[in-house]
Image 1 (tube, rainbow, N blue to C red):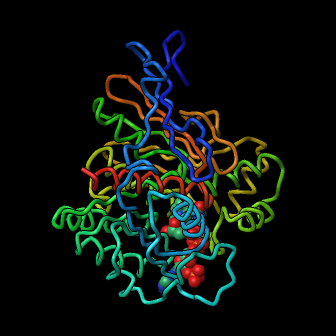
Image 2 (tube, rainbow, N blue to C red; image 1 turned 90 degrees about the vertical axis):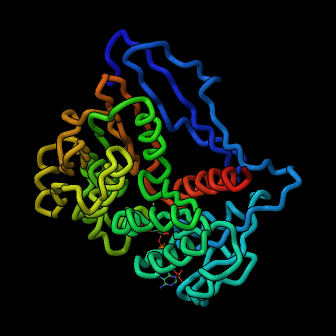
Length: 357
Ligand SMILES: NC(=O)c1ccc[n+]([C@@H]2O[C@H](COP(=O)([O-])OP(=O)(O)OC[C@H]3O[C@@H](n4cnc5c(N)ncnc54)[C@H](OP(=O)(O)O)[C@@H]3O)[C@@H](O)[C@H]2O)c1
């Protein structure tokens, strides 16, 4: 991936974890010219209040207690910088591995009106997620959203609402899961004009295509992905390419300033027939998102034709090329409760740092 003979710099995005570990290197920037930055110069840590500071904890209300919400609640309850103030669910009687210290509620309006500094949308319901998102931003409360569908559909309106009411809106987890795709896009954009982005943005599809290459049949691979929480019970959004389309539009909005609904994406679905063709080829395929200033394509291509490292399993990756030739890339786990909760924790720390100013 790196042009031969040219230096590469490694930027470590150190994300402190409630599980007392540092997440792996997630952002690798490759420079086609100029000196590589020293690793210690590039290691970044959020400037959110430290655990032993005397400030009051930041109050966080979490909508959703599923794969992502449960991992997030555990992380918040383990982090003295934050205090969990409300949890919204659909069915409070449901058996759960994670039981928050406070009782979950089911009234979305009461949740959105509750006292908190930051609200999180980790819901599977787009309708309720949008209603909560609008309501809290209109109160001037900051929002961290994991929902690519809500952000894709309402990007402009929610951003405007946040601006109008002095709230912060962050959605790192909506694209890339644990891979800091939007952070890397922002970093690249601050360095120059972006020419194109080559990315794998759907962890479920990448897992399926990896399994197909390893000889697993499509249906078994799908069932394993569902059992592992990597694919939803209804995998239509992943298989149709709708998920990668929404993420590509959000990336394009951040990279090029387009409104997502004004940005064309051509998409190729993974049908059982196409999966059979790919299996018969014996070749590793990827779902490649090629995101350019005027349009994007989401298509199934042989991995050796993909302009970037091919991630294993549910991994995500993005390589961002500037007009001047400089390249930035990042990778990380694209799905799963813990990595996604880590991305949201990053948003919470960033919002907290702004609130503390
Ligand atoms: N899973 C991942 O790897 C991943 C990665 C990145 C982003 N995301 C995004 O994160 C969000 C959550 O995903 P997930 O995998 O955690 O989903 P999930 O496991 O299905 O959990 C969804 C949660 O939403 C709650 N909910 C659904 N409808 C509701 C309603 N009408 N009122 C109140 N609560 C409601 C559910 O309540 P009950 O528990 O009572 O059923 C559940 O707690 C989605 O937007 C998803 O796209 C997920």
